[in-house]
Length: 424
Length: 210
Image 1 (cartoon, rainbow over the protein chains, first blue to last red):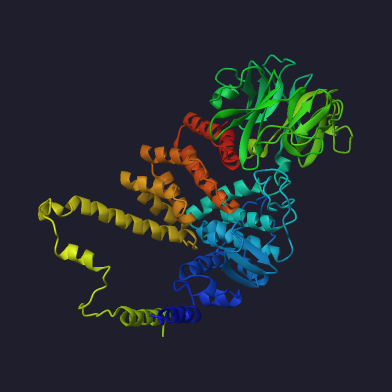
Image 2 (cartoon, rainbow over the protein chains, first blue to last red):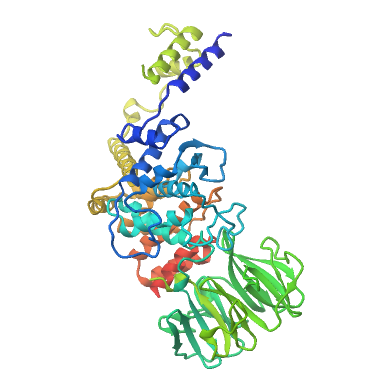
């Protein structure tokens, strides 16, 4: 009986020494193992196949030079993905040392974490290309906005143009989705969605910012502003000073609180009052006496914040269809989602020209109030720059100069129509 | 010598050496004994006749069909991550398969799409096939998938894959439904999901539909 443990140990040692996982259905498997220095003993028989299949797809995938895509910049030559990968990977192994990540790269030595194998084949291929880029020194930075804003992990690239790890990965998805020739239809469908999803979330500067438009309300009427200039919009709605222009998940909206809020139709431009209530469309009842509201995303959650005429703050939880009350904020003047520094979040502006960021967990001020520039009404991010609208109706750029595009207008309000509003 | 053979021989030796197993069946492992007795000498009278214990031929046929379907499904999911020399032929084949899906198979697909432990490609293919099926049951399952809450996951790529499944359900439904029904679905997604990524997919379509 006492020989049993020794014998078991001997068996396991023998197995470990002799096991050489390979992927028998892929003839190129031994070549990949050799060329990429794959530590086969760290993979099981099945897992090595996940890797080998991903590599073969990267190597044999073909792209047609068709219509140009803003996301195909030739950071990597579309015909040489595998060669490029080979040049940037010194070794590949399976591990479980960083479970919160998918894969990691230490000077070209890439470790694929346990759940890498559970991902879709598209995400597996994309993450290999992503990690390989890190060998050239492209590292990540803190996410300034979007769903990964509050993540402790440095998860974003500053912009697409730098061609970092997220950019080469996004470029691969764009190639598969728009130029892929020999991919499974489901793989292409995934790539199309992945492109839409990641292009809007992993770059601090929006790669499609030039497609953004401003919706502007002036003393003379309404207009849409973009890189092509201004377009005056015809208007059949009785304007009122109490109207507030807001960006919501259902699109631009006009809030006339506490009466209601109406969605703005952009094509053709109109504000139909019948059946077009923002609250009815979202199937929710606003808190009584509501005087201001902002819809906003923080981290991985969406919120609709509201303030009532008693200076109470509320947050709507979309997952549970409930309002949470966050107590009283004396002197609350209005809610904004961009502060004078250009940071995004929910902020309360007070009567005494101060503001504070609101903590999502308990709707209290996250720190003592800072100074709000006197006379400033609203800040917006437009095409990766920060604009300021003052109470005097003038719009200024980040250098404090009058913004040329609206220099001759007296602006009452303006919002950015996000990319997904104008995307073809 | 292949490692598997070596391990098998080692285990056989270990069993013989430790438990004294006689492969001629003379001596049995004590823990196995009661089970074998029960099978060979049932200590009770059967409640049903032996005829009624036989599976119904229709049931067997159904089980066989499901097994065949699952076998086909897993093989197809394996193909997603491989090069495909004939994508349009594959699409036609999948459409053909989708047009013959039974109620049970559609139910299975919905279940598979929501199984967090399954492979990513299998889950996506389940949604993709439902999207190709042109019937009300498939649309109903897709709607349910689109509105199913995204579970908490530890990793951003897992989360991304979860969103992708639901976005594909939305994508398919928008192709199937009337514009007004599509708008209703998208507004339901926007009113129920707390996830900004999924909301963006819904918003994208809501904008396109005007």
